[in-house]
Length: 272
Image (cartoon, rainbow, N blue to C red):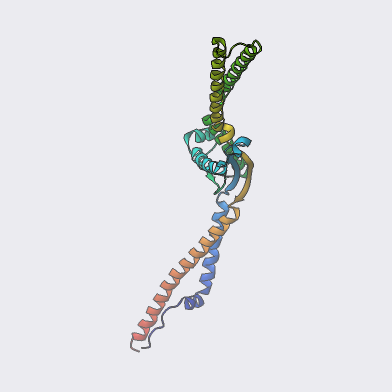
């Protein structure tokens, strides 16, 4: 009895070409149908600039490095409870919407990326996320009351300096001895007032360097839809259908061919 030739993929395709074509068409059509019924997801992006827009802050040599560090920090703040609660109040629905914030490498820019079931939903969520992050950061950094208070104290200290200077000038015009008690008291008053003013100016500089203007985050570009999975869903499910069709055909063809070969072998083994 001659040896049976082993089954090959090309041989199976030649013998069962009709079933191959039929199953591929059937499963691809099914995959495309699933793709058509799958929801479309739209992606919108917006950008924010960390480290604020203060000209004084930008003049600092380490401003670039500080901005990059702040972008990373605020990306983590975005995932915190404060921002997420604010988004839920604006209508954010985690069931069919997603949103994230991530720093763009080597920049002070934070990328906001939102997905939604429609272009309007994705754009709205991205813009709401920009507002929520900015509001949260501003609240964390807000020291405007302390800055205003320090400014008022500086004005009072400078007034004291001016008064002390005026007193000394008056004593000089009257040619009062500089070793006198009155002159010594006026000089001490001037020194104290000047030292106080200088200390307050240093405090104000520190407060401004930690303020919203220097360390906050601001919108850089409005949200816009950048992509959707409208085409990809057909490509994905069409490919799944193609692979599934070939797989099912291959299993069926192998089973049919194996049965056919066993049947032929049985007939050859039977005596005539």
